[in-house]
Length: 303
Image (tube, rainbow, N blue to C red; front, side, top):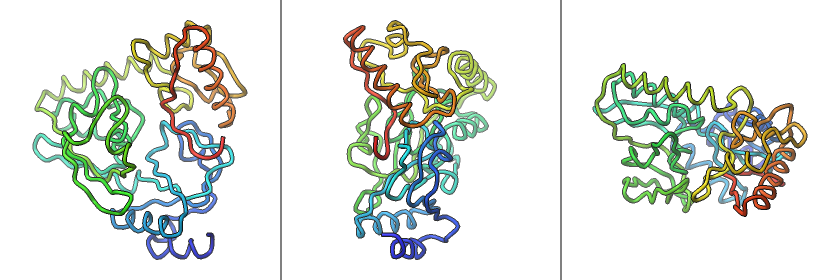
């Protein structure tokens, strides 16, 4: 695929936004992962359409990422195209009590802009380590709030290259899922409906949530965020703790002692270390409590 495919990509994007054999550890919050054969950074919906069409026509696999949270890339890397929707597509604008933002905007940046505009309702997302696009795909949530509370519209690209505007009530937002995830759409931008509030109160709420995160989560180590989905009727971290797995380690990967729901890259872990640790935690929790833990972290490449 290489020479011809590269030249086709250069017809869509400038060469400074196309990288070859790009180490994915530079682009994931776990700080692990081998090279992506191609790594591209589109700036517009048209460029993105061109990339997807090119991949489909040449049958080259592609994968969309934001800031690389919630993702484990194999040590062997990925023999395809990683499409990063992040810093090149991160505009945020305020329209009255609504915020319209591109998919690459960090949730923390959207929350900060909301606070500046005295808009309340998005404080819960300020510390979620991801982009708006990913948050829409998986209906991200924290501290009693989730995207479905505020999301009124998403503009998305289908696999066939069509741009759709999907109203909030058609997004099928559930626990860590949506119609976007089910159909493999790519988020371009989203519209959030918030409410007028007092800037001081909004900032106080954000500060309170930040303090709770700092004291309870292992933010000092690379991780993908919360590693497992919450099993019905339980908390993943508590089940892992009760199984005696706090501090349990495989290679450089460790179950955080601060919060057992987080697997951390404690000391130059490989993706294989992390994957094996996750497998062993699942097995031990199943044996201990009979509960099946499902990873929230997505995987890319060969494991």
